Amino acid sequence: MSSNSPEALANQARPTASPPTSPIAPPDDPYFKWKVLFVSGSGIFMVTLDSGVVNVALPALAREFDAALTITQWVSLGYVLSVTGFLLPAGKLADLRGRRDVFLFGFGAFGLASILCGISPGVYWLILARVIQGIAGALIQANTGALVASAFPAKERGRALGLQSSVVSIGLLSGPVIGGFITEFIGWRWAFYVNV
Image 1 (spheres, helix red, strand yellow):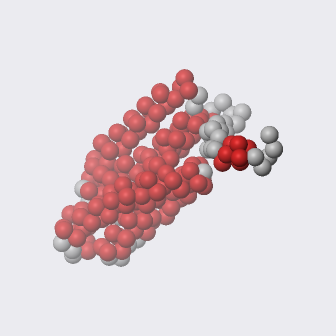
Image 2 (cartoon, helix red, strand yellow; image 1 turned 180 degrees about the horizontal axis):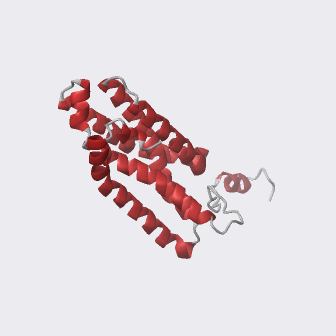
Image 3 (cartoon, helix red, strand yellow; image 1 turned 30 degrees about the vertical axis):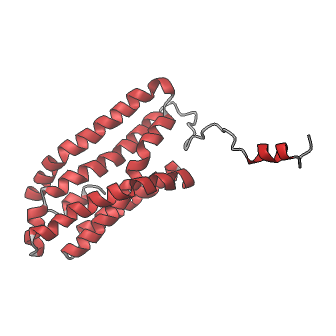
């Protein structure tokens, strides 16, 4: 069959199944998978913790900025909406650019946005910084499961993902407690600096 025959051209046009590529290739380090779990767990802990930490600081923010609670609620809403709204685009970006790189960029951007939140001179600047923080959080959250799944062999993957899910739950549950303590004894700005 010639390379210009209709059958050959049709075969070239068909998609071929290729094995999925791992976003991270485990090196010879026997602890590599646990390092991936720790770093991705730290990232997802920050993202989920931040949802609850700030909610209890809203009355303090309203007093500090002399703003109505209906305005300061956007500090939390802007974050949650941007995390939720950017999860799918963050996943697609990770497919195009690599999960590891997108995760690490999100990790750095989350820390930088946390600093911006802490130094915000007004409530509207804080809302903007929280939206940026939420987008960075989506870059983290969209990739943690895939990074852990690619680092662990199939027989250990379920346990690793279960541990990561536990970290999510711990972050969500401890956020209000940690946020209340920080707001009461240290100051609301440290509710953001805790991520750095």
